[in-house]
Each structure stands twice: as structure tokens, then as C-alpha cells.
Length: 179
Image (cartoon, rainbow, N blue to C red; front, top):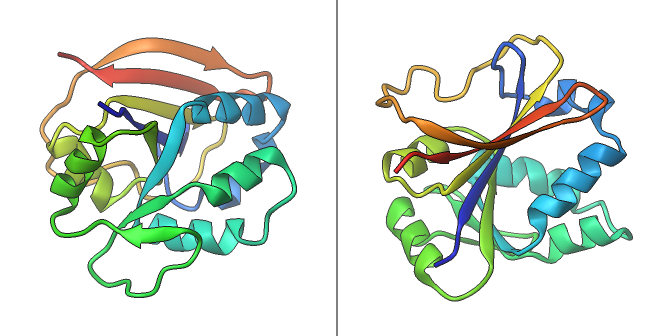
């Protein structure tokens, strides 16, 4: 069975939106190396519509380095009820998003990775479809929406699998749902 990995950037105070406004000063060789290692064994991306649209706009113009080329070539599955046109090697998740992800996980192939946090994350969490979380905590404070804010989600206990600390101050917590 394929593993679904969620990778989420957040500030010290838990803001998750608009990471393009606060995370770039911390992108360095360590950041890139961790992200490249995280992508080993990953064959496809699973994205919500908002993240897909933002990523497509940003990544379509990037090419020429091994990471960007792999990232762009990778198939993308998008949870959307409204998007009808797809670019950037993407297709919609058909029918119920949770059931579609369950089928993807059961299919043959490498792992799946999900970026971005929003309504789709809540759906995946409620259906216990995420196998591993990588929460990137950046040493910055910013106003913004917090992860699963006001979602009414039941407490979900996670097991710490490890932490990675970068010289820039980023700390990544690698966690998995407790059995």
C-alpha cells in the first residue's frame, strides 16, 4: 500500500497561509536537501484546489534543476468540485475525495505527497488517510489562518518519529497517527 505524506509549513504561532510571504528567507541548502530526501520514493502529488492553482502558477516557470524537473513531471491529483481545466500534469480526483485517495493509496506505485493545508486536509484527517506528517515550523511570527482552525476536528494523537533542526531555525517534526 502506498503511503500518504503531508508536508506543511507553519510559523511559530501556527499560521499556515501565505507561506510565500514568510518562508523564502529560510530556504537554503539544508531546506532543499530535506525536501529532496522527502520526495524519494514519492511518485505523485495529492493537492487541494487552492494549493494546486498556486503551485501550478509558481512551478510551471521553474525548470532546469533535478528537483524542479521531478516536481513538475510528477502526476498530480486534485481535490476539486469547481476546477474544469487542468495543466501541470494534473487530473481531478473523481467522485468523493476521501474514497478517491483511498483507492490511490491501494493502487500500485510509489508514495503520495500532499502539500498545503485546508479543507482537504481536514477530510484526509477525518478519514485517517494520512500516514505521515512533516510539520515545518519556521522561526517567524505572522498573522494568518492556523491549521484546521474552527474545523471541529476531534483530537488526533500523533507519535513523534523524529525531528530535524536546520541552522536557519526551521524545525521539522515528523509524526504519524498513533495506532
